[in-house]
Length: 129
Image 1 (cartoon, rainbow, N blue to C red):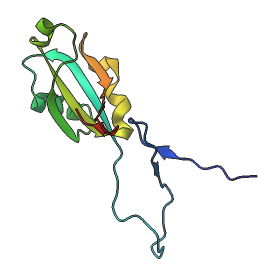
Image 2 (cartoon, rainbow, N blue to C red; image 1 turned 180 degrees about the horizontal axis):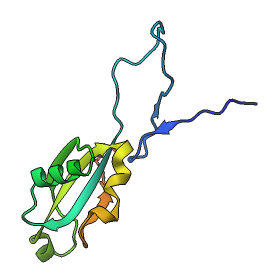
Image 3 (cartoon, helix red, strand yellow; image 1 turned 45 degrees about the vertical axis):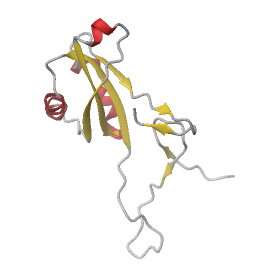
């Protein structure tokens, strides 16, 4: 009979990563050097053109969502005319808080929240655009 292990896999790109969860004792020879924050990147689209990264970050922070980074990005709306009237952002939050960003009750009607689409480069690796 094999022991059961709980693996925490990274969210997103499909590359498998397993993060250790055992709490080492102080005399353990093999332990992590740094604390790693698992991250999740979301695309928040169809916000009013007056919205800025500072306004969005303040809004999310007021909802107790930790924002690691927040950058303006291109809207993924299809019609060019629509894209000129809105703004969009690439927001990185701790993976443990990702579910909070997908709560439809915190967003005005019509705001779109999606997982960030990482593009593959010519070598098959993913990039952040």
